[in-house]
Image 1 (cartoon, one colour):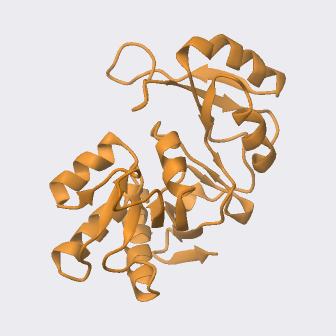
Image 2: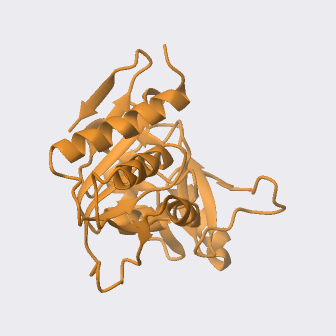
Image 3: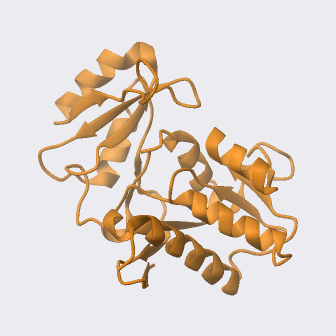
Length: 239
């Protein structure tokens, strides 16, 4: 039996090896790199392939300060999605997830990077998720709180609107920082739970339609391939 941390590394390394073998990670590609404890092993695996000469001329779009700093240390060239060499479209984004539901619907944003992660993912031709076994769930809404990034001035208005949708909202507080979490975009995060499971595709549109909401953590507009590591050391692929 392997630990969750070992599963994260196994899922990331398996995904990178598999996607290189299938020609979905290739030299000269434009790749989005995710944020968090599962995405970082994937960044490390890609960096190792670059260092070994397996991959060359990779251009990366980072989804957070964390990822940008890691790429800087690892020698991965980082560009803006607006850079003329990127042109607003990526070949692939590889990232982690907080929940993977039926049909590979996702909840993301535990690291408060959901806005940039979604912009990057939704600008990609292909999307790959790496995860440990605990992230696979039968439904969304009742387990891992859904992150919703909001404009600070609209906090109370948004909370009232979400409560009308049945959500219980908690303003995310910082760790080793006094006060709320502030995203890389200068916004706040509400973490939302429901008593019963919700329809993520329906809720993504409804929540994003609330004035003052910047983005929510449901990812349902694209269908990623998921590499989910298991406690026994195997990796389950879900297309």
